[in-house]
Length: 216
Image (cartoon, rainbow, N blue to C red; front, side, top):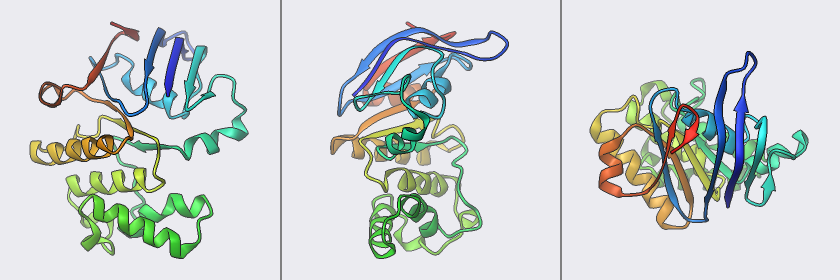
């Protein structure tokens, strides 16, 4: 499902965020990436999401070697991935429903089918009653659940999240982690970069721990 072999990421100026990292994540696993600030968690998530391309080694996701893939093929790879950002990246000039429908519109899905799919995703995260609300009127926890609905509306095989609860209160954070667990229970591979040690202790997922770019 996700296989990294001697993976490295070096930025201009010589800073190496990921250093010779190798691991394998099988289909249906829930994996948490942990480590200190600056350990390389966000970089690793971006590499798996094909937002960045590695400067060394190889990274295979869903059978595609992202290190060697043509840039024109990357949008098709991303259709099988869902991404939840810490800052959510919502469209604040569009309703909750339109935010969730946006990836389907980009993919060319007919509006009627996209509407049905988006409403189902909102219902899954408990926001169907707020489908007409603008994101600015939603709480922090609701905004994050909206971001999750948008990430899963394409029914991805892999769900990625970068510090998804970093700005949430404990109750909202627990609700978000429960959603990830729900998707994992139906076979979605879930990879979460987080500092939340309480949830790690509670849910006991597989943990990949980074330290200054290296996998411990």
